[in-house]
Amino acid sequence: MAKQIAILVILLQFHPAISGAQERDPAEQVKVLMESCQFSQAVNLAEQFLSQDSTRVDLLLLTGKALAAGFQYREAVAALRKAEQLDSTNIKVLNELVDVYRQSGDAGNAIVASRKITSLVPGNRYFSLQLANLYYLEEDFRQAIAVLLPLYITDSSTFFVAKQLGNCYNELKRSDSAIRFYRRALRICPYDPVVTGKLVNVFIREDNVAMALYWTQVYLSQDSVNIPILKQSAYCYYLLIDFKSSAKQLLECLRLGDSSKFIMKYLGLSYYKQDKYDTASPYFRKAFLADTTDAEVCFYYGVSEYRSLGVDTGLVYLNRTFRLLMPTPQFLSTLYVELAAANTATGHADTAIILLQKALESKPENNTLRFKIAYQYDFYLRKPYEALPWYREFLKNVVPGSQTTENLPQQVSYSDYANNRIKEIAGTKRK
Image 1 (cartoon, rainbow, N blue to C red):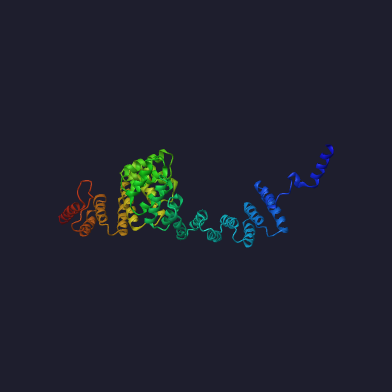
Image 2 (image 1 turned 45 degrees about the vertical axis):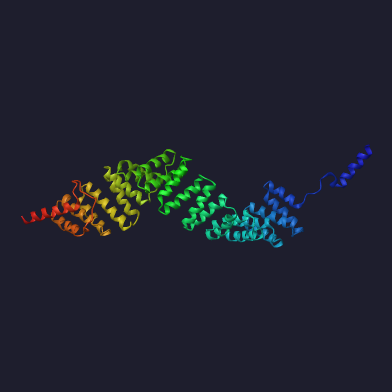
């Protein structure tokens, strides 16, 4: 018995295969090193084996993967291209090339490699979606659609395909198609916040605010604390001139922890449009502190301040608005008018008259400004004779049959007041 055991031991020493210790395949040895993240050692070992047999596609593939894991993309591509030359139909090699090109920022070659794969396996949805995504990332939305549409026709129940088609058409500003596919995506996966948000934005862009609001309400009925949708809902209310509802939604966002510039700006605007200037002012201030380059916020903050008796602060921010931008004629005219009102409130009626004239220069079709100049001369500067030609010019430019909703504090229309003052001033002059 002892003799048999001794013979067995000798056989095991000279025949390792009998003990199951046969040397592993080179590719397996490289994989073991890669699994333990020893990528440089894996590359060195693979190159040793390739020096003996340079036609091993599996070793070249592993070399490319190991090099890419070490961020050596150029070398990785070189190894994988060698593998592709040896086997141009190897899907694993081509797919690894796609990944390496994409990681290195070479989207063009990633698309070329991806197209090779789809030509080899045209029925494979995964590789078609990969190609469509590459086109989308490169903003080639028409090519992405060309890949996605056949997938949608084959199976219209895939949420991602419908959503991505919506995204592509949205980027191309083809709103009808974008709406169609976003709505299809929401039938597959109702209450998706990202798709809902994009659908709402398309409706807003198309000036269909009522429909945009409807979709925000549909979503909020299921998830009432989703801040992005709440913000969109508030914005829709604002556009629909429902400022109370807008403020209510924005305050809910604030309660939920969103104190962004958007919240502060539109809270300010929602109260401003209700003539609640003292309430609006703190929100405008916070919005301006968040972005001191926003001329619109700066302007509304200045107006809110002086209209809520913070006249000095109002003047500072109205003047600051000039330094932030070169306004459009419409905005510039409005700015001059508000500055004039602020200067009048601080006792600088002479400066205000100059500003009103500048406002008229910016927007000469605004006939009301001629009345304001006349009234400024007449009431604030006590110079009725200088006011007289402006009253006459105002009446001369009144469109026959037009109605104005503006009145003086005495509840007298501008036209009636101008006519009365012309008679009074002219009568005084004759005396």
